[in-house]
Each structure stands twice: as structure tokens, then as C-alpha cells.
Image (cartoon, rainbow, N blue to C red; front, side, top):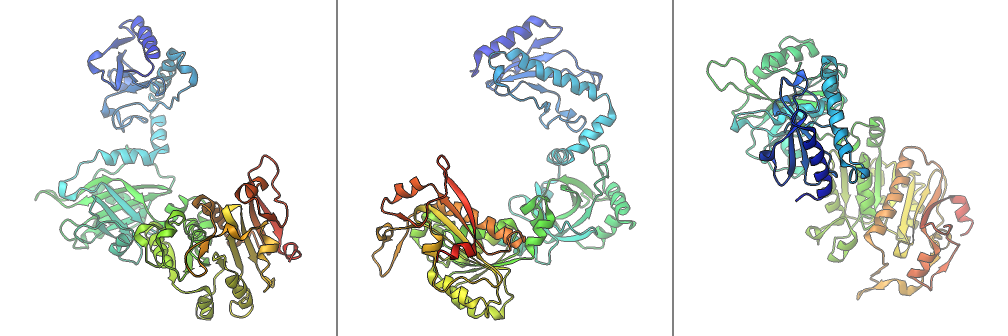
Length: 564
């Protein structure tokens, strides 16, 4: 049943009124989804006499009218999808509900313009080139391969910064995909680390090469045979028989996953090489496949600002505490591309941590640092995280045995850690910059204190008086039935908001944008403090204007310490 019967009835009356010279109703092709179907008058010569269909779906005009052609036109003409429908790019306009005929007219007009442009072979080639990755995926989806050699997708972990050809190790995964990596690590180890299920381990390989960005890559030039691909790779490498020699110099095991991959900027094209199925078949067969890059550069930056990612990859950060604030901060830094992160936390994950921590029930009783690092290494390609199940001061006593970090971030919220780290900075930590981060109860404020150079955080630890916005009554803490056990209430959203603010500050420090000691505070409006605890008193008025929920305030460290 059409959702907008009046709109569909109006279009039906209009098209039926034009007569068979314009459109003929095809009720036999109509269904619940295809509410109305008309066969349009024969199209342009480029369609070879084929008559397109105009289709209204049940939610027309929310979904604009469709133009459908024979599926054979996919990859013959641009903007024709695998199922034959024309991707016209016309979008819904709110006025279409009241005036649906012009909505259909826009689609017909766009289709007419498309047919006119298809008379120009140069335009067709340019359109195929502009969206070359999408067309390759359609081509690969339609490819046929012997059942025992079928690969639905290749996951590729290659170093895209290298211009020379690369030889990768490859393995089939249990779900019909395959994985190839040019790193020195065995692909099965990487696959297991990322929780990709392996089938029977039969090692294969992949030859990875770059295609110049100016090189035309359209259906008219795609290699269709082993010989054609060999000629292309020979031309690109300047080495005669590049593919033939690489393939035949190796004794690939039976059913081995063997691939060729071309990188062209962010676009990727690939083939699986299938050995001869018949005695008289001289060359192996090529089966085009979809290739998905899973390398660190693509996964973390999509090739955008790769220099910034490379800069962060060289940085090392140590984080004290992997609780509700430290854990999301560590994840944000890892996803931003920080090269090495050391996580220092002696605590185990307990059931009461679940409500506001990134870990969950499977990690109960396990070390927070170890579990968090393992999860992020599995989730983020190339993430280097090392867990230390010890107290922050224990880590500091061994600091001279390790490469000092570019930044230490204390997320414990513990006075002893702030004081201890400050006392050890000059000698043990060699003036390594330090950022201390914590939250006030209810997430009313969050703070990041950055100490650099010769600046010193006082041993008196004036966090409560000089940095915190409010002094909170003792009854704010929720006490638990244990010696000195309790917690301050706040939600997971508060923790992630604070982690976002702190991570932004950390990244600016690593990128050299913050070099002077300072304090950044994310502060909620005064009314929020009072609604959470009417007994709270202010050390200073929250600098949040009326009508604004929160602000991020920056103050030089010297200014803050004047209040101490």
C-alpha cells in the first residue's frame, strides 16, 4: 500500500494521460515495493533500442522515482548500478509531496541529460575514471571463480609509502575473505590478534604495486587476462615478465591464496590468480576481487594528512591510570595515531566498573591495563600498547631503564601520584612534560594541568583550591562497605566528555601547539553545580554565561598557582 497514495495517483493520471507514445503502464512488473511501473519511449541510440522503465516505489516521493535499464549496461555506461538502475542523484524536496509531477520531471530531465552526454565517449571515460574505485567493486562483485578458489574480499595491510613493488604473505580467512600483509609479522599472527578466524593455514602471497595517479583506469583498459596484466606490471616496473616470473618462480601450494594488487592513490584494485583448470590452458586465470585496505595509514587517516599521522607515530605517551577517564583517553590517543602508549595501572577490572568503563563483563577479575591494551591492539591496526600492572611510582623507579616518553599523563586523580610525579620530574624523569587530568564530582568540571620545562607543580598539591571550581561536601562521595572505599558519582558520558577535552590537549602538546605550562578546565554552568549539590561552595565563580551549558577555560599555570 503506497504511503502517499495521492502523490502516486497524481503521477499515474499524468503519465497515463500522455498516452502510449510517451509511457506504457506495466502492471505485470508491479509489486508491493514497485507500486507503479511504466515503460518509457525508446531511449537514445546509446541504449541500442532498449526501453527504460520508470518506477515509483511505495514511499514515493520520499524516495525519488527510479529509472531502470537492462543490467548489461552496468560498466558499459557510467552511473548504472549492478541491478540496472540509473543513479540520477535527484534528492527529495519537501514540495514533492504536494507537487509530485515536477519531482518525476526532474528525474526524467536528469536521465535525458545523461543520455545526451553518453553520446560523447570522452565523457563516459571521464566519469568511469572519476569514480573508478566504485566501478571496480561492481566489476569484482560480478566476477565468477571456481568454488574452491572463491575470495569475496582481500584485506590488505601494505606500506603505501613505498613506491617499489612489494611482496606480501597471504592467507585465506574462514569467512571467504583473505588477508595479506607486507609487514615482517606473519599474517596468521596479525589475523589472530585482530580476531579474524583462520581456515586451514595454506600460505600464499600477493604482489603489490603502485599505478600512477595519472594512469587511466576504466573498464576499457582493465587487464582481462594473465598476459595483459603481466604486460601492465612489466611496463610499470620496467622489468620484462614481472608477473610471470614472480608467479612461476614460486611453488604455490594447492589452493593457495595468490593475488595481485594495484594501488592508485586511495583506490585499490586486485585479482586472485587461479591456476589452470584445464590441461590445455596455458595461463592462469584472473578473477577480479574487491580489496580493502586495513593498513594503519588508511584506517586512521584515510590518507588525509598522512604527515600528521607519521609525526604522531613517532611519539610515546605514558598514561598512569586506566579507569573511567584514563581508558577512553588511551583509546582516543591510539585511534588518533600516537605511536606508542604505555599504560600503568595495578588494578583489576571489577563488576562495579562496568557502568562507566570501556571494558565489560568478559574482563572481570583481569588487569585493567592488560585487558585494555589487548583490546586496542586487536581493534586498531598497528597500535603499540604496553601494559604495566604496577603503581605509577613503581614505573617511575624504572624510568631510567626505558626510553623516556614525550609526555606523561596522570589520570589516577590521586594526590600522591601528582606529588610523587612532580618530585621525580627533575632527576628521574629528566624534565619530561607531565599532564595531570581529573574530574570533579558529577562531571561538573574536568581539568588538565600541563607542566613543562622548568616549571614545577607545588608539593602542597593545590588542586582542590587553585584548580577545582568548587569545594564539595563530604556526603557527595558514595561510601562503600570497605576501608576507605568509595567513589564520586558521574556518568560514562561525563567521563568521555572529559577524555575528549584531555585528548585534544595531549595531541596539541605532541604536535607542538602547547609548549607553555597551563591549565585547561571544562566547566558546567553554576546552576548545574547547585542542582547536583546545593551545599557545594565555589572557589571561584564558574565563567559560564547564562544560556551556555559549559565552556573550556585556559589559564597560564603561574596565574593558577597564585591562588595556591
